[in-house]
Amino acid sequence: MDKIEQLQKIFDESNRIVFFTGAGVSTESGIPDFRSVDGLYNQKYRYPPERIISHSFFRDNVEEFYRFYKDRMVYPLARPNAAHKKMAEFEAAGKCIGVVTQNIDGLHTVAGSKNVYEVHGTINKNYCTKCHRFYSLDEIMAKDGVPYCDDCGAVIKPDVVLYEEGLDDLTVSGAIRAISQADCLVITGTSLVVYPAAGFVNYFNGKYLVVINLSSTSSDSSADLVVHGKVGEVLSQIKVNA
Image 1: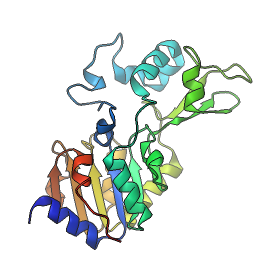
Image 2: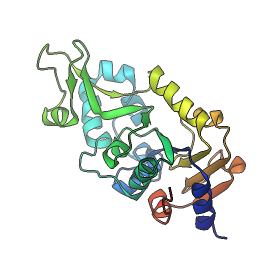
Image 3: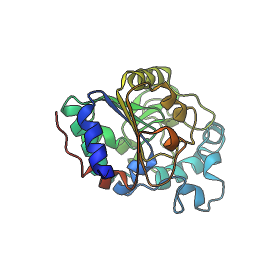
């Protein structure tokens, strides 16, 4: 039995699947992985990317933050790929109880997934730092440079978790609850090096732990099945059998 057949068997035998996703899930949609050879961390900027996407940098250098953010963090033309669509298909069939994602691109929701825990926030929600008025991504991108609130004139901040900021408690508790209730956890497109999110996998006590990723992860040794490959290409070979 090859690995795709093994993966199909695991999915067929599971009824409470949770997908834990990272940047590798969205690379097939044209969004670069932060830590890959061609990723953001390997490109040259005036400041290191880790510093630019920090809370203190946003506060002190908001113009530079938004130049980087709009240029390198937001991909408004990106569309869900085969991986996003297959996960949504599993949920629609009643086989998936949630997607826990480190991605901020919102593509799981666009693909049709309902129970999505965006632990690092999303580019699709933006709020005034003073009056908290909501702004969509389109509204943010339509404003030149730094977006300011139409009502009070304060800076608008993307609802993404920057370095030095804590994760949202409700999102975290929901993600951990889903993982702890899963009978199958599928770790996809993540190197499991970003904490605390990567630590969520420790709450899994179900039957099958699966890793689908291009490179090795810290969970490979404890996984029931490891498939090295692009997530979309792997999942496109799987049938959703309710």
